[in-house]
Length: 624
Image 1 (cartoon, helix red, strand yellow):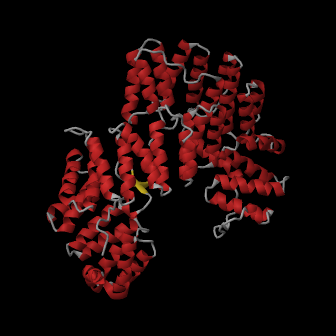
Image 2: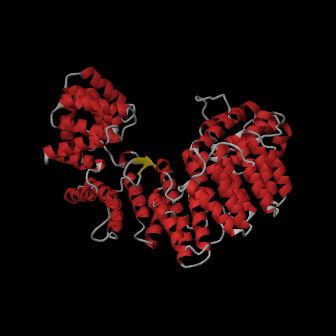
Image 3: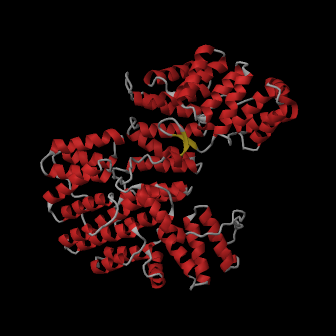
């Protein structure tokens, strides 16, 4: 028995979901559904500089073969001897597993055994900060700068703590002592400017921004934060000019767009302000934070400044840098910036989402949920955050919790199609096909008679669940509806075309559809596999071998693709190679029913295995 569809729904990977465009991916890969976009005014080059800076903070040694011990029932780690080397090695393993909390704890234990070790001090501080253990990080920051006077994160932490307490002179002193090249200069000048603004020294703050030297893209920072500082000082006309200049330089940044629109609205230019938001929405597919601003402007109310205090403005700096660093890769450095933003301004909910995404990327879904729950009820981000929370529960294999969070949204608003798709995909990923079909139907019922092209995926997903519950006529109608909305959509062409081949229906048209899908996505191993398997089903074994070899090159770790190639090799007489592929497929953790079929083929060959598959229902009936 072989898998029915090489382009398989998420059912063949338990924690998988689908992105809204229909491609496969985990909850982490699918990204956030919260409507968050990174600040947009921090180029990737800065993140690369940060990674260079962070090299000195990362342990060089790695012990991939070292496994962490599990405690027995009734035991605690206090029952085991605590050694410097043991804690250090455990810290390295935790760090290698992207477990920031565990690494921070084990480095702290190692530091307690060797308190004068500067390396352990630096690692413990950085990881405690990245993990959000602010009280401990603040204590360690003093020790860090005592031995490393210009340590970037140490100076930022002490400066942020001073800024939070409105000790503006002390904050500026700490920021100015940070070293580390362009990233340190950017952080110092922007944060020092906000410290001056907090002290009421607006002109000095602007002068400090003018001192920021670096690449051309630094100009956007200077201009945007100058506008925020002027706005806070109630110098609205000057602020509006700065925001207009920043918008001209970069109209793809959420915060710049929002600041510019608010400034236009305060100047009485309502239509122009709404036009700015509309233009951004077309490219960004609707952002919850902008929906709030739009409502204020439409109702004729005066939108407040984005930064209502020096602390909020400095948090904006930390959030913007941290979000961009995280977008370009890395864990603890961007997490440290984002944790500092939230420490300085707990209401800076925009920092919550990229921080949660970092924990998702590390595979720490429980911590991601914990962070996401910091977004308060009533926040424009809350609905999107509920979806992210649900997807993280799904990644933890907690389908009931995921279902509860998503059903809460759907009951409140049946037309919330993002929640509908997320819940349907979660249920489908757990092979709850009938329930998933009902969820998709609830969403489709809200579309009306003439659904937009954008909703093709709802019909496609429901078609999969209907096909998996043996409701083929209804499934076929959904696939055809999806193609009506989105002609030549490769995944739909592939699924419907392969289904027809598998059923012996419309063979010429079906093969043409799959070939078209491959033409549209030549590097998609699953779709290439569909073409190869269609050739196999049609008895074109040489063509099958050619396409299936290419599919395995594209997706070498997929057990089904390797199994298919083994079958094709067997049919063309390459039986030794067939056995090799089946062995390889067996070792790639296939689904249980696929594993049983592979093992039979390894014992008796393809033809006898097929006979055994055919006789299996009879044997099962006799066993009963």
